[in-house]
Image (tube, rainbow, N blue to C red):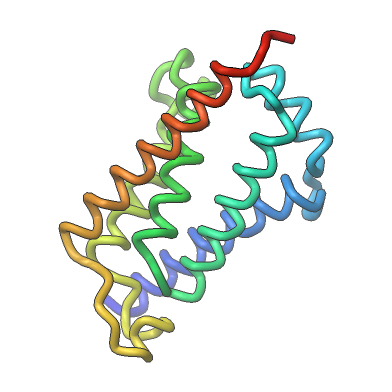
Length: 164
């Protein structure tokens, strides 16, 4: 179980770290803050650059925490918030299937993140080395609720911005 959990944590965290770097820095073929901000504006996430910074920081920060295997519920919460926002703004209207740009894949990413918040990052992690225990059903529920609150906050901020 340690190998699978470690591979899940490293791949999930690593890809989110990369997505955050795309938004914040334009790395890995990303569009940086200006391009991401413009895209977010088109989704109604105003101000776009502010939302790009928030999403990039949540993805990079959550990804880095997940890779390190520390504060896993916080990492899961950040990942969940960005994926719920993506579902709300992009995927929901397309139905469930990824072939139609639906919400199938973001839901699986949320499930993976919340699962890691429940089972923990494993022995091959910073938490494992420190002997801390920030995981279990209550931590998973807190991570999920934190993700919902983060997505609701993004939606609220976007709704408060004047129309373009």
